[in-house]
Image (tube, rainbow, N blue to C red; front, side, top):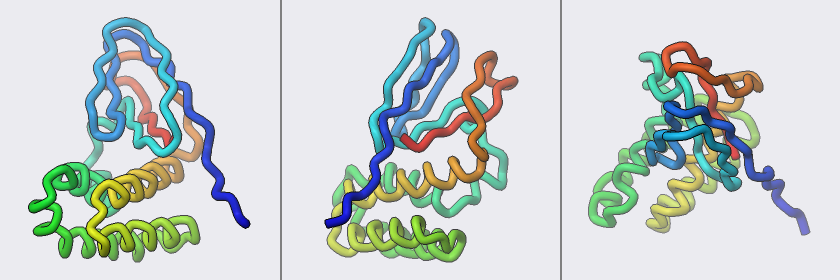
Length: 155
């Protein structure tokens, strides 16, 4: 019986005045804080909150944010499923790694069965994997948002 690897929760140290997006919710930090974010969460901080035009075009990000937007409304989710499958196919073509293809299969199964929550969780993992690969292991940084490096995490 194989067990799937689940990364440990990630600890984020955020200075006062910074912002982060955790699973689509904007978090503004009033005082210096440390957060422990559970496995499977999609986290963005720093410049990643203000992506360049190229980053806005990433199919995995569009899939994630589209699912985040329509996933809570069953009628809208049903109406958007064909478009979501199209986005998923772009993700599958864009990144042919084993991990991504496996996650695409998971997301496709969730879309086929109408399970918006599972599709969103899968899309969050794919988007986080893409951010992780794109940053090359860059660490967190502190300071004003316009001076910070992008910090994204798959947790």
